[in-house]
Length: 251
Image 1 (cartoon, rainbow, N blue to C red):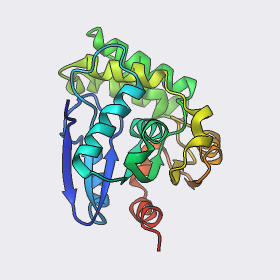
Image 2: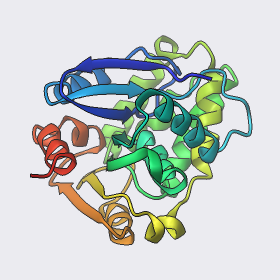
Image 3: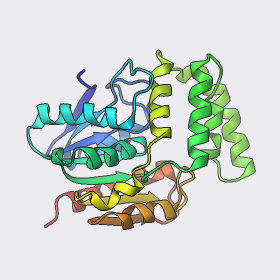
Image 4: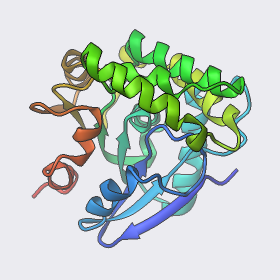
């Protein structure tokens, strides 16, 4: 099955594996648009999402194989890849299983596996929504770093949940289940793709230690941590587009 693609910007081609999205479609969320627009000032961005109607039991290896097939068909040669958040998990799986389709890679806001608290929050969210219940509030621990902000985001997300329900909640449930089992730590030493790992110092979904372990485990890994940056602020950092360009297009 062909994957949902969206193109914008001009310049050197860059495939962007998108972050966790409730809908498996080409339509960008309001949060993604400014990030990809900024990258589009430096690259011809090819933003790709996971396939719709994802069946139960789908693995990250299955999803990486779908992407590898589409990348070969669309480009016919290795291409630069940026994976953001859940897209970063997929990017690492792609580098492990299908290195021939990737030239250089940036993994932002992601690591070789999900930490337990992020896995738990994502599982509770997707299972609740798939069962027809409000679930967005389960993601509040990834947005608020103290009891006050967590309480604020819990209430806000609970209220917002009906407005952000996907048409097919099982797509995001099945992807979350695939990412839940994702762990390529033991495969990092065999990945020969040059990979830049970008993280935020105050990312509540991951930790600086996980970013460092991922970069250190790669033969050609490099680490960049933005001081004081949260998970979303990593992608919105004013230096992010230039840092991605500098790594992917070395002088």
